[in-house]
Image 1 (cartoon, rainbow, N blue to C red):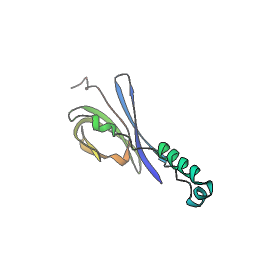
Image 2 (cartoon, rainbow, N blue to C red):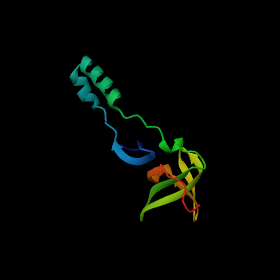
Image 3 (cartoon, one colour):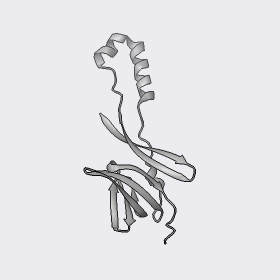
Amino acid sequence: MVHRTAISCVCGSHYYLTMSNFLTPQPTPRDQVASMGEESSTASKADFAKTSPTPPALPWMEWEVGQRVVVRYRKPDGLYDALGHLTEVEPTHVTVNTRKGLVTVPAEVMVTGKRVPESPFG
């Protein structure tokens, strides 16, 4: 099963968000666990629970409405950037007020994003 996860990085004063795919580890098939013996199967289940990825926090939920951000997102024909001020921040999407109008970017198509300084041109 393929899951999508957000990975964030703080570098200096910039906050980066990247989206990546990873494969969830699959538990050992039931017949193999049974053949390992009771102690081994208990250890195996405990090890699996420790190594199972937990969903990370959604980095864009730390952003606040009014902040200037850039969000890169993927469409079938390529990558696009939405640069502007946030008007809405939700777990499922963000809405950015760009020069061309409002752009809503669903979480599943976000590639990367960060807060950016105000434009020197106003």
